[in-house]
Image 1 (cartoon, rainbow, N blue to C red):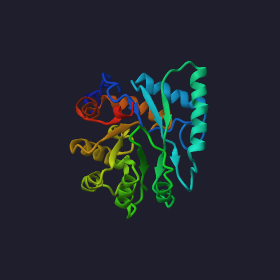
Image 2: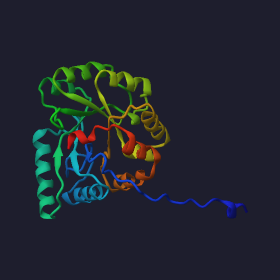
Image 3: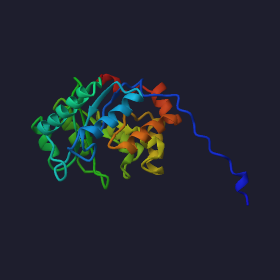
Length: 247
């Protein structure tokens, strides 16, 4: 009986785009090599949406995961070549490069020692991710090892790790590790606790990079919708993000 008095939800009009960051440096748009786009046609759908929203350059970061996605420089660069050919065929003009999202597994230290980590930018940034279950005990040791090897580590989406808090992030960052949040975390795409942690990271100035972590069209839709949120507006307009360093 009180339904007549419910406030009608008004959808906020989008006034922002991703022009200020220019570079999306974490996505899974290379076709057929991980849990992202499976075909060149699917890749193009995601890339067109990113371009529509203001992205000027894409750095694809397929998973490198011993138990699931045994990618290396050869498989990744082959997939990149396939994608570039499709972009050329469709007259789509956007720079696309490839690095990787390295999983912190038992092979990770060896890849540091072998200097086989795939990097982005002239400063040799390395994107890596942790387990969603628990933090490995030697994270700080591996961060230090990466830096000693000349790499600049970037921890992917720390807001999504349930065991992570601001104090721990501050410690990790103090050892020279950059932190990257997924833009759609600020929309609540991964749930309320992740959204709250992403907002806390913004409030505590703990964000170095933002990116889409684009896998599929649902991510693409959320990537547009999050542009109406105040926290993303703050990041785009007031924050010294490092994405542009990768242009």
